[in-house]
Length: 622
Figure (tube, rainbow, N blue to C red):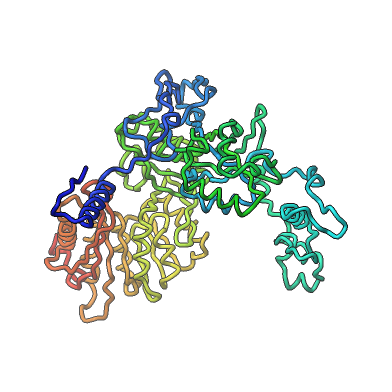
């Protein structure tokens, strides 16, 4: 957009209008970062078999949306060995991890290791900056060989004079490495300093500093990590690798780059040979095919500044190949590639101990084992089994019909909630980790004087947690397997003396308790059976009908749970409670717990049992 001059407009106004239009265009235009055509690789993915299911093959696909900045399975190239067809399993889904290997061509600056941290902070915006990939890469041969240490410059005269400052610095480094710096003005490294203290302290000193000898020893975990990130040489090329990424130097500095570096830093910098260890600074993917002359002016300015400060700064622009393996990609990225385009990615699941509990949609079922395999791979070692609920909860014991899709077939696991351990068998009992927050809310309202009655306790997630707070807990469940695990968990957490366990129907349990003397001490009643807990409220009608009305009684606070699909779920649940109690006016506090399905809410209603209900004449009602 151009601005025409006008006699009526001053030069200041013209400048202001031009700046305003420029800023408007700057903010309105989309900021798309152009990627070199050399980097995008048009033949990114050829039809290769990523997995097989009998005679049906699932092939990773790519959507037509624009490529995003950063690593993606839709970018890069596939190694030739990964495109070869693997053996097929005719009975199960086989996920070929090699099909998710991607190779990216990058440019890197080889610099001295002493300068890599400072240069990384200065060039942060122009480096690779990919998740879980370090900007500083190491390859074999970039460290100083100990056998070459004697060949480094040494003092040329007996009085300790050096030829230049560069030689003085190198000798000082060698002294610090070998622990010879004490007394000549140089400071020992922290490791050597602690080691010296450990050798010089006496026995009394070791008693005072018990961890001194321990911290002076090398860390074994670091040794394993270094061994894990072992570097290897393949076909004469330098390769640095770990579990999910490999950096390989493909081409050393070309003649054009050497000439460009000579123009940038001067003849003396390029002609000097490498001394000491080096590192690779991986540049942004935009500069993959760029030479020294094509680098941004910001990079050139930083390199010039460091070159002026130190004569030891020697630089090279090399070509690298970054290979990302299956372990690098996130679960959602892998599933998005494998599942048909437009299908919702099942990224959320419930964790019960070492078990991942999926609730797959109908459209996911043909790919259920594939999804389970990816979930298992991306969440190890915490997740060891992946299951899917194949039917809704319909039996009287509230157990779920589960299908093991991947991993260990045992459904017995240990869950830790609020510092308490629970042993659970999902094949025979019910457990929901999603109600942990709701259980914590109830526990926050209990006091030391309370006596809690848990009518549908299950394996005891609320009953056992409450036993650490309240005076006593009366726990009941109809499922004999749940009662067995409830007793086992009580002993496991050393709370069996404060919990009394029952195995009977909920309505019968309520009536038997209030027919005994223990009824006078019950202050809290929890009824967490959302599908039908409200129907058991009629058991409270007439619990004190055979007792004198002028006596002193304790009317408990009842917490009952339920589901509702109504447009006003709170009003609907309130009405159901009022009908079950056959009471016109009941002061109920209803709150929403969570949305269990579209349009279906789980609610909790809390109210004090009305006196009229406790003394109601059930004979007249019938």
